[in-house]
Amino acid sequence: MVFKGRLGLETARVPQADRHGLLWLERGRLSAEDGTLVFTTAGTDRLAAGTYNIPLQQVSNILLGPGTVVSHDALRLLARQQTGLLAVGADGVRLYAVSMPFGPDRSERARRHARLWADEAARLEVARAMYAIRLGGQLPPYIQDLNTLRGIEGARVKESYRQLARQFRIDWQGRRYDRQRPELNDLMNNAINHAAVAVYAAARIAVAVTGTIPQLGFIHEASGHAFALDIADLFRTTITIPVAFRAVRQFTTEGGHDIESVTRTLAGRTLQQEEVIPRMIDHIKALIDEHDNRRDP
Image 1 (spheres, helix red, strand yellow):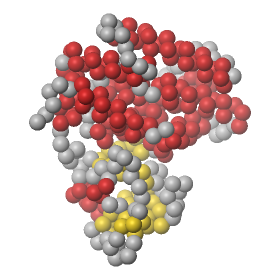
Image 2 (cartoon, helix red, strand yellow):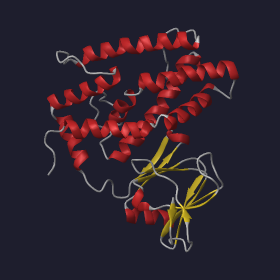
Image 3 (cartoon, one colour):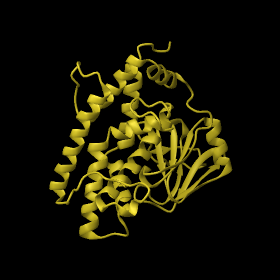
Image 4 (cartoon, helix red, strand yellow):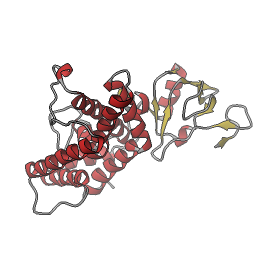
């Protein structure tokens, strides 16, 4: 893309944001020059070495990955333009910090989220919609009990484990994970946990940039990031579990530093290739916006 004049050059290169205005940057310096935000990088797989102009009117949030530094002037410029800044792990497998200077510029979606959560019938409808996504289709209208839905989905997840174990020729002994003593868990269960952490981080990013309320989950309740857990679970059988099985297969056949690093790398690659965070954002918008019958004027 050509961007004229802002750096005193005839042309300046501009990195591409995705369809939600998310711009991923890593291994470089984000700074301000003459009132313009610029990013200088030594080069990555996605971005050639050089200096890039960041057109803030096209960017809603900047996601800073490993190897990046940011100047105070850049932070001031981001705050002035109300552009969000998130510090993330490689490919979004971790979320370290969120800086949204003034939050989203409007509060409609947060209010819709709160209304849906506070209304028992509406809350159940959103939960049913989430289970419909997880189960790959519409639910029978007579199933209105969350425990029944949990049972249906639990059976589907177990079958997913069995199918993937056969596909990747892995000895699967069931889902067992001791958080207090992870060294006692088998390789497969550790990989599932590492993949789940990566997808959960992606969900936290999606929740942050949509301006929804992390604490107000429709299925999960106790966690301070219950809504992010809800969103992460939408991808359990399509992303999380397959990534874990592929990671174990790769680790046992090709080796690697440890199962965590192999799983995290594979998870990050999958998050990017499958556009998981943009899809999470789409789901959030559909779940919140389409189920609220009391739209703000």
